[in-house]
Image (cartoon, rainbow, N blue to C red; front, side):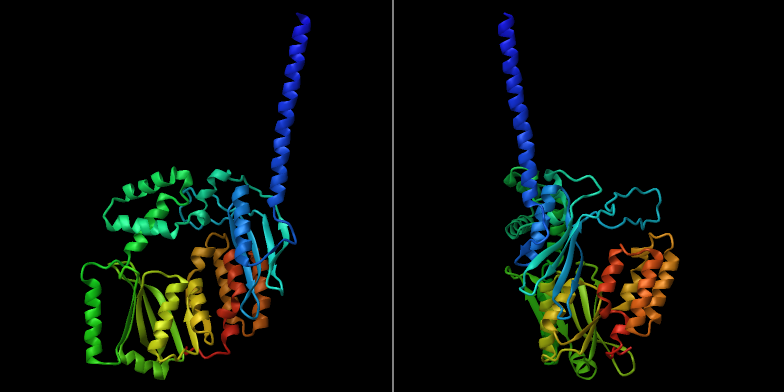
Length: 426
């Protein structure tokens, strides 16, 4: 009996050892697999998009959201350097005046990142890496909630639009997508993203007769003066997306005062919540003159390209010598495509207007604002600006402020000392 018990004990012990060995082997295999897809210095990618997608996929596996923390272009305007980092990088600043309002902490000054550069052969290479994070990572199953992963595919967008046109209620429309996907875990976007997309689609779906009324009015204006110009952009279903119109007086004014143009998108119409855009010039009295108007349904590069190209055709392909806009990246891309020979400058007023919302969280905000204004307005040369800017950043320890870093990287687009070589009409 004792012999049987001893043999049974030995068998159990052997089985336990096998299970334990298998468990440790699985852990070791997992660690080896992680090392295989971890970024390493010297890794090469055919394009920046491929590199970015790789680091995002790596972030999804590890449990963090990857972002572009900083980038720098060469003198030719091509992207040369980029730092990809964890979304928790940088320091958190509470800009809210309500001290009792709770805010989720999304910045922990996490140092995890990779630095990359473009080589002469056109390929991107990883230069250096920091792997460790200073915060708790998400489980792989929760990475779908990262903002960068919430994507609605084109065929899904079309289905959403058709159901909305059929007046299917929002909840039923979204539930049908859940059923088709099998579960919410398989859906690459949230209900909030779905509702936001529906609102965006509805923006320029004009009421019955509105689009035809606009066209009739434009035809009437053109009949009265053949120099009245208009163009309407329709989608594949014939729905109105974008509109541009320029009257005869504006076309004549452009011939005389079209060297410098300001493109303003800060207006919204009340009824449809769509962007009203204005091309504005300055006459010989220093007064603003209208050089064209547009209504656009999206503020992406493709839409701005359509608007700028249409306006350029209206002006007989005569591009302005300089253009002033806000800091919108899509707008900047479109200007580089349509107006490659035009000097592009950011509106300094828009930049300084953002100081409260971007810097008010600092305890020395008033001193920071005053010092920054002095650096910007009182620097007479580029070298003086560089020196005073570095002293300003060091004095207030603002090295990790992403907004200021972005401004400095693009200083040639807005700093007075860098743009004074061009006439700006005021």
